[in-house]
Image (cartoon, rainbow, N blue to C red; front, side, top):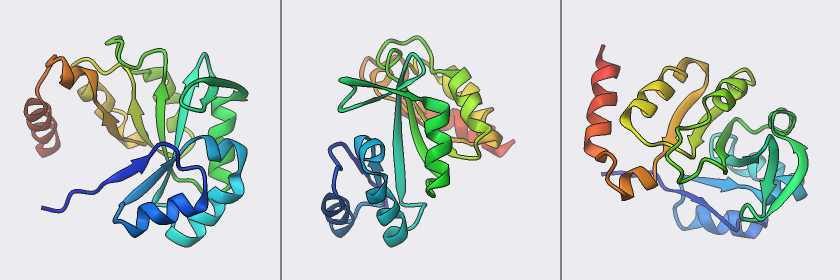
Length: 173
């Protein structure tokens, strides 16, 4: 079985990105470096292609958070995503950090807002039920293609196999 692995967290230099791919990463997720040094992001896109580079867009109150969510920038998230698109990014991992682990449901409005950018979007933060995944799936045609589920699986709000079965049934219709 071939399972693609995404590597992220602390990827703040081109050497770290290169190392992740050397060891077999399918894609790399960049965060803080995309704010401070977009030249590294451009270099990574040029070397590995836009399908292999994902930028994490972490948001608090509509602003971009960086540094492991410790620092809040002045950057508006939608403007930031549009800037990322201009430098060649095609995929983002979007997290509303106020929802992460809170079981409040994902930020559907944010997903909808980003869908107009043409970006491929992974939604993270707040997913509490299979119904949340089903609702996000409705955004599929407008760019949402994946979701990160953490706490809901950890606390057994639902089982992964049940979520996969539900999505497969929907896809077969």
